[in-house]
Image 1: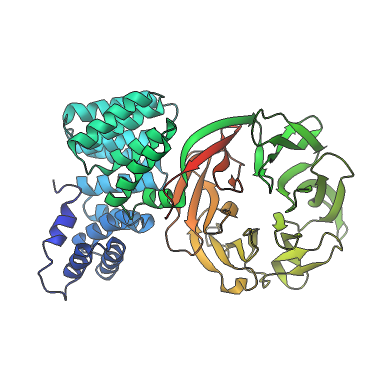
Image 2: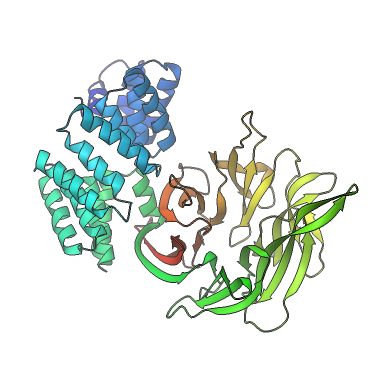
Length: 522
């Protein structure tokens, strides 16, 4: 069997070969340390020669190392079409599927390898890694790691995944010992350094954690985990807040958290302190379906979008139609709740930080769907993006300084009746020049900027029913989206604290606060 690094070693051996061949150019880029450029060259080679197995293998392996996960998956699936029982390709595809949050698919690849050859420790390690995110399968993770250690007692990745498994069941000291054992066997075992950093962070040893992570960055500078570390988006703690919390968001000053939830009177806008006991205060309730909430930039009010079916007459025929209303709720619980607007075409609504106006999706008569700017004082609404009746724009959001804007663009309907979606980011005053951050088959939900505007976080349906995953991507589109959290509840969109240290998410129906850490660029 070639082994995980076999293709790279073979390419590096070609450094002295003619620079006119694709493999020699890739080898030269690898020798210079430019893995992303080497991955791009390998993928171009695979595109030019789609039946070339070495090109597909190089593309799959290097794209995975460079964080180009979708390109890696595509190349490896093509390779497996020609060689369905290639153990190395199966192992690599399993790793790519883990990076993409498809843990079920990843387990299938590793189980296939084990069926072909039962003594491959990397397959058991992969199986453990693919099972690790399941909070109900801690025993299975430990079992897979134990088998890997039985097959190869001196295999550092097996000790590393055992450490990760022990950490997940709360045995931090056992985890530390297993991870240090892995590093003792192989000082360059990158997963062991990452997991030791995470274990140290969870134990409150912040500086020691960063030391481990810095070593990981030296070993795997281009990986998805490396990008998360530099972005400060590694989850190091989980605190449960309240049950039944949805669409939770931090107040502008970070002292309060608002969420919508079911309770007395139907759907309600609730507020809890960001720190201390999560004592709930109900600000307003309605029997209508509450779809979203958002803090006003000055923290004085909360915008709620509610909807209810109404019977209307259209061309002499009665029919049910959803009517949506924009409601302003005083954040201190005092004063009158006011209705700003009622319209069947209202969509996702939020605030534009620099103006105090409301940005929302709506329909402009005789023009089409657009994102509009609504002045709450006058009720005047003006389009802020060019309307295009063929392309529906969804989920607008602005950066904290108001200079950047996000929106989701729905494609035209496909022949099979489905749609594709583009997540766009661009200048708020010239959104026509926005660039596509990613294209997905499912609609991205709740896109938002990090406080400094450098990263976009959004959620997508995950591989399991009724569960979403949180993803992040640089706002300039320089890296593929990276999985942040695979356990987001069905209707909780990511929301960060103003200092970027915490993110609101969910575990089942429980609203939770995630602690974020990493090694930001110095």
